[in-house]
Length: 279
Length: 279
Image (cartoon, rainbow over all chains, first blue to last red; front, top):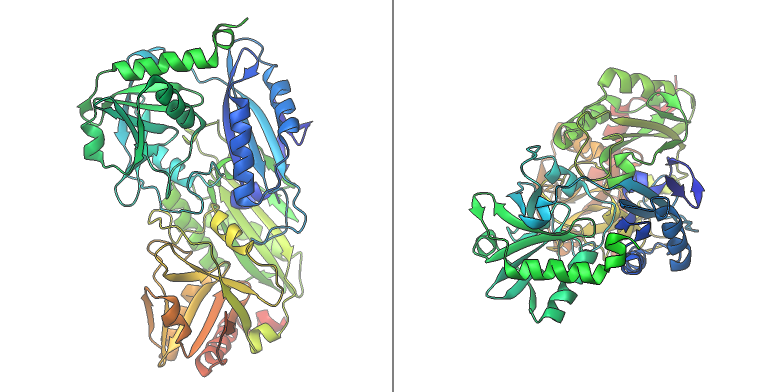
């Protein structure tokens, strides 16, 4: 189930700059009972990313309509909706075409079969050797230049490890390969500043907002492995998994704490029981 | 004229990781009178890049055959051959498929219509605002994550400026958007160390080798704008343009010097008159 510029097809022009240079952006959405979750927030970030990369935004109305039409093909249970927007086709060379006609690709995928235990008892993470580069121009943007994450995810195949944590070249902890990372120390939440590396996740911003509502201050800062490992609670989050507690990072164990559980409950309420359980 | 995995077609599977993540590599070759120039060197770099990214290399014999077959379709004059190798199609998510079947794309393009004056009198360059990020894991590799170059090239449209020079986030001069950069001071050649940023160009390594043959030492080091602007001669190079002297960078003018001219002549001899003029 793939729509390319509104047409059902499964291949893209070889001259598309997404293929040639990773010249584009993407969003990954949770679909519950036929409805894309946090669609408005995802389209807002996509619009902002397009502005930062000077790619004409295809429009919220159009993308929203296509996202909803595609999502309702999986009318019960869960799925994953991916939206890609590229700078479209162009000639050889980095220079962008004079008239940019962006390519939009919407595709519906099966929801990954994660055990319930990941939510409840937490997951195991490792530290990746692959370092995130420093790049203030592109930091925060969910663009298609994702070789760092590919290289990091290729480091392990042990199914007992669910996520890899990535440090930048200055040995600051930034995020997971596919998640943002939070830790809790003395009832305060901490997460990495994304000024030089990392992706500003939609779930990250929702967690920050829910935490504030619950009265837990969130501090964005620069931190090391040692600070992380001395935490009371640690969790990772993204739009597909929601919030997963970390019960172990390398050899250090953590309890699934009260604040993590509170935030999981708040998130469920925020998504709404009608979306979670169907109407 | 496009060959995808040996078949003539012009579109690629949407699930190709080249499109999804920029998960691949590329080479751009000069084609003269039906023959790809420095094919062996390009395939060697491609193989090395595949090894660094854990992508199975499609094989020198196969790629060489396809490259030659495609190139001879433009049997006189010049053309550009682009070779892309990606990690192939895969599921959603950064994790690579258990069995990687790389995609290879070979395409033949018109040679850009550069005036002769670029070789002889030199070109004008500017400094780009877009900074190259620091990433030791990916530095040097000619991979498909090229948003930095796209953003830098989008900074200007003035046709009087032919190249943009890029600094890294520490304000060290690294390269041009599509070229490597050399400067000459007191009969020594200097070019940037590529340990943290930049592409290790084939023409860069040929220039280093030709310079050594001519008795001009080449020093790879870290340098600033000021050191560059105090040079005796400056040139940029890549596989398509060869060597272009810089006659002006921002407001500083340079003469087309003896060493640059010597290297241009050496390069012509190295490519061979039969390739340059046809047999």
